[in-house]
Image 1 (cartoon, rainbow, N blue to C red):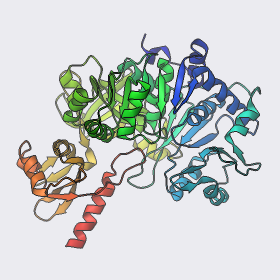
Image 2: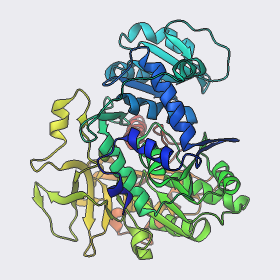
Image 3: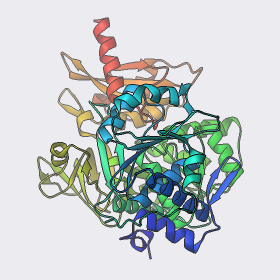
Image 4: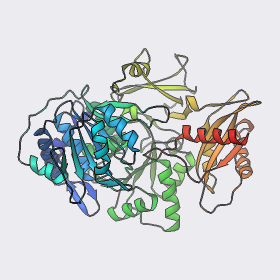
Length: 531
C-alpha cells in the first residue's frame, strides 16, 4: 500500500509515534558526527512538549522556529504537533523588520531561536523586539554559549530537561482541519502571506513525494536547503518519517559541500533547486567525488531546463525527477515517477499526486489537452487558507473550489504536465506572447552562464521589450550579442532578447529562488537613469 494511503487520517504526532514504536533504533537524523534515532527524536519531542506545556503553551498556540537545519528544529516541530500547536518556521536570515512583522502577524506565543546567525546575536535582537511583541511569552535558545536567562528566556537544555519524565494532556486533533504550520510566502509583491496548512495537507504532499521516489527505510536523503520552507518540512522531514528513511541535515547546503556529504554519508536520494544542481555539476567537474550511492534526485522549487535534468542524470545520478511545488499545496503537487519515460522526466513536471484534481482554464473555461492556460488544483494537499486574511483566501479559489495558482501550464495527451511560466510574467512583444521560462532555459544551456531570468520592460515601439538578465561563470568572457546569437539558434525571432544585462549576483529569497520582481525593478530603474 502506498504511503499516501497508509497514513491517511493520521496526525503528524501519531505518524512519528508509529515510526518510533515500530522502528525505534533506526537512524532518523544525521547532523555532523551526531546521529539520532526515531525513538530518540520522539522521546526528546515528548520532553520539550511537556516543558512547554508546564509554561502554558498548548493547543491552538503558535511556536516560531528561527533555526538553521538542525535536530532542534525537527524536535521542536514534533513537540508542537504533540501539543496541538502550530509551528511558524522563519528564515534566521530575515531582516529584523520582517521578523518582527511575521512574529506579530502570526501571534506566536513562543519561539525557539538560534543564538547567533550571520553575525546577528539573537538575544540582543530580541531584547529590542520583545516589547513590540505582546503575544510572545517565551524564548528557547539553541547554542552552546553560557547565556543569561530569566522567566521568559530559557536555554534549550533547560527547557527539555524540565519536561523529562513529566506528563501533559493528550490532544486529539482533526488532521484535516487543525493547523500544523504557517509558512510565509516570499513576499516579492507586497507583504508576505501566511499559508495555513493542516496535518493532512503536509502528510499528503510528503507521502505522495516519497511514493514517487520509491523512498524506503534504507535510503539516506540530503539536499534539504532550508527547513523554514514547506518542502523542507513536508517531503524533507515528514517524507523520511513516513518511509523510515534517514535525513542528512547540513547548513549551509552548497554544491561542493553537498557532494562531500553525499560521498561521506553514502546518500541515496538528493533534493535541490536547479541552482544547487548547477553548482554541483561545476564542483564535480573541478574535483570528482564518489557518487555511486545516489539512485534518484528530485529537482524542485524553480523551473528546471531539460538540458539540466539530462546533465544531472549523465554526471551525478542515474535518475532525476522534476517536481512542481508551491506553498499553498503543502509543497509537491506534481512530480515525475521513476518509471516514467526519460523524455517525460526531462521535459515535464510529471503528473499530479494521487488524490489531487486539476483543471487548465482560460477566462474561467476549461481547455482541451495541448492548450496553454492557468493550472488550478484541489485535493488533500491544498491549504486551509491565508492566516487572518479571509478575503484573500476567498480570492485564491474559484467557484469550483480549485486553487488559482497563477501558473501557466499545458497537459499533453499522456497526462503529463508541462509548465510554461507565470501568468503575470508573460511578456507581450509586438503582439506575441513570450514565456520567460523558454528563453531562460535556452540561455542556461550556454556554457558561460550559471543564472538567468528574463523580464519585460516598457518599449514605445514593441510594447514590451525582452531583457535577459544573466549571471556569468566567474572569469568567463561573454558579450550580450553572443547571448542573443545563442538564442537565435533555436528560438523564434520574436523570442530573442532585445537587451542583455549582466549581474554579479541576483537578489534571492531565503531558500535560493531568484526574486524576479526585484530583478525587473532593478532593470527598469537602470533604464530610467539611462534615459
